[in-house]
Image (tube, rainbow over all chains, first blue to last red; front, top):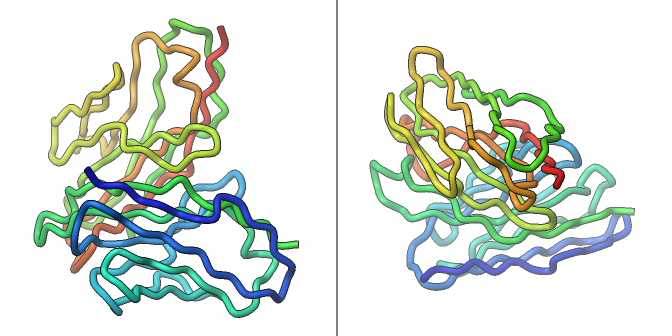
Length: 117
Length: 115
């Protein structure tokens, strides 16, 4: 079976400090990978998605970047955090099934709660 | 663009009450529809899905029917339990996407079931 690991679970960082959140998937190959952010009391916003190693698509302009150095590893980074970067960050994966990929549900990690102070 | 609208919470119910969470959507294509549930402090879990008109998704006593004519996917459960307390998200995936499965989520509805 497939599992997704996301860490750390919680993080408190000062404004201007760097950020690195890591996500790994086990039990499948060539997954689609996603980073979402959930701001307090709001819905989920897609930040980045990746359909392969080194292939990153950004959905919104922001202070964050993403990388996929290995097939099942997805990293969310920032060089200098802003207060507005606080939120709950969720990594997710889905099967890459070609034309039917829109039917493939996303499987989420347990999230990282980031507080920028 | 695509969008999903859910009723705002919180919704507070007594145990064994009937739950309905309304969800409507707008999409440029013919989407697949999903309900996800988020328990406190956790990530999202897929609850159910429907991929074409009149399909009914069901799981754990929850049901939702894909209504193309009203662009809706309302979630229902006949008798809720305290363990159903969570935030519920409606989402769609447009089959017109070039790659990946980018879900568009509603704002979430918090449900609190009291004993």
